[in-house]
Length: 329
Image (cartoon, rainbow, N blue to C red; front, side, top):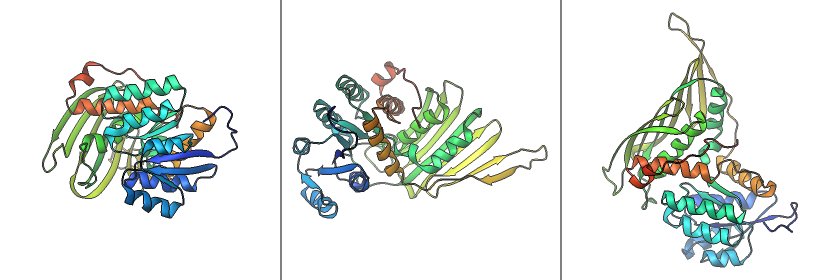
């Protein structure tokens, strides 16, 4: 955003990449007050026409044309292997960037994006949208200040036809790696991954076990073999047990354990909100107020680094990251 731009004037935003997520970005941005969706960009003319005809914004065949139209911020929802080139091009023009997870195709590329954003003085946010899921936020609030002992997360479903460049660890498990770091406020110190490719070219099943520096044991079960979607989180602390369904957004808490095996249980309050809308509002606020984003580049890079180690990335494993876990929110 130009220094001369009034905080009250609309923030001019663009979207690059019009797959399922990119379309949703465009829809939400077109509805936000104080935001002007300048345009969307994608080489697929049919997708551009589909979005522009419904939202009334301009359409472009290239990122360069969208940047030339004059935007303050850009959301990047293109395939993962394009994240680096797109993000660097936008940052070079002084444009603030929200890039969908994972931040980049490799850890080294992620570092390049972070370094460029820091040098340019622009906001860089990574789209770890699960942090904005009201059920996730209810879970985090319930365990705040407690001695966390273990975390178990299941994220499974059928193979997505859209997926071609990454496997289940980068597409799905990276969400939960981020949540483990966020819940515990601690870095992951030990990794025990088991992955396999059953039907896909890349891994489509993964059982990942971790120990954080604070001693929390965590387990992620993820695959593209289950015929239905399931997203569940279970957290055991010294005094309670929290279960959450991230799809139905129901969260329960078991507590007050008795010697006879009985316990108390209650349903926790979960707000009603669209996670993507909350994420984009947070990004816009960060740009306008020049505050640190909820999920900054360091968070996105740390989660990618752990995911790559789960896949046996020797280079990533040889260069451990030292970044603060968590973030604002």
